[in-house]
Amino acid sequence: MRLVITLLIWMSAAFSTSPAGAQSDFYTPTTAEIAGGRPGTVIRTEILKGTPEGATAYRMLYRSVGLDGKPIAVSGVAIVPSGPVPPGGRPIVAWAHPTTGVQPQCGPSRAGDIFQSIQGLRAMIARGYIVAATDYPGLGAPGTHPYLVGESEGRSVIDSVRAARQLAGASAGRRFAVWGHSQGGHAALFTGILAKRLAPELNLVGVAAAAPATELGPLLADDIDTDGGRNLTAMTLWSWTRVYKAPLTKIIYEQAIPVVDVLAADCIESLPDILSRLRPTKALERKFLIDEDFAARQPWHSLLDRNSPGLVPRGIPVFLAQGTEDTLVRPQVTRNYADKLCAAGSAVRFEALQGVGHLPAAEDSAAAAVDWMEQRFNGAPPPNDCTQPK
Image (cartoon, rainbow, N blue to C red; front, side, top):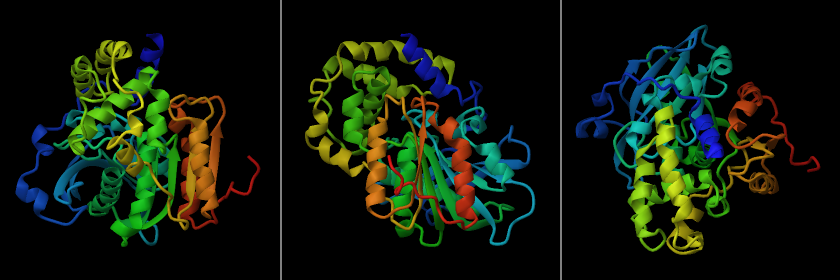
């Protein structure tokens, strides 16, 4: 129980317990508003309070594309620094957030103080970068959140960059980097994979990911005996049965389904959220999966494979940070992904965080990640650890 409390409190520490103050109708677009423009077109914005010094922040609702190819609305936040505009416009860093939940009320832009959750934010503002932080589809704006669905995450990240470029006074350029942790690391890698095809008008200079979810099958299988793993698996199954219509009853005990529904309804943002997850998490320990090898069965095997990120194109440098004591995303799995990138000819900077677990990985690697992104924006040759002994 103590481990569960510690884990969940850390996950929520970046978020304020105060209400966001956004009107619900801000997040609810009309059909005409959704259909009325290209992906990344802004539907509406409003100024956010509590912005770090030297910047202005906007809550925004913008257009994107769903997995069925139809237009959708996605919410997020853009933070625009003050100060002189460099030649070519301000660079943009797209921040991809870690797990906050799987329902609309769990969107980070709804939280009382999203600025605490964006690791490295003040350093990025000081360097003159615009920060675009998507909620992902179904978080914030209405809809079912496609949790750990790579194409959905990547599209929403890319379209958040497009939306930030439209803000009056932003003076944004075409260059951007993407930076994310855990689920956000998964999103960052998919952004790297999709960017050139989906947004040829933009220039992605680098992908930075801390403790990214890469091999989803092993991730779910290895962690099912932990509280964090049961939460992750429950949210994934809940989401994918709705997104992909994948059958649930053959792999989850009938009496566990209401417990999974309870966990899906709770966010990971405030102390009340955390406390409300403790009892259902404990219940899953007693009886959850009928088949713990479900990741090897269809359609789950194909879906897990489809949503495990492949290789980022060789011309895009990659920064990977991984805690050596991570028990959720296994260090060797991230190392294996780095090795695959190296074998394909990518330039990879690998930051091994000694003694660090899963949850602190973004905070502990943020300074190095921001410095690495600054070098990419400045056009410096990317560091490459691929030739170094492991």
